Image: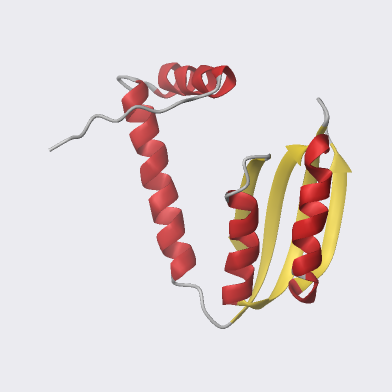
Length: 128
């Protein structure tokens, strides 16, 4: 049985949901949100299976004002970061590309630090 929940969304996020609904042909906003949640759950399940030592790439997009947060997080995980590339994007955004090598548990925690921070716009782990 479906449960009704309420949630707060920014105007920008609501606009993006409406755009996806129209572009992809979803029947309503709820369908867009459910599809997004299914993707997040599937992605999380895949990450849970990771073990041992991994090579991976982490992509992070954030506002320039969040640079201190990125620096703080990366300093706690220097032992798994091989390379970091920082690039300025339009509209005061930054792209961080981290090449990582290390224990899966540490890599997952590194990713989690970015994913759970509201200041990050986009976080994607790619495992080699």
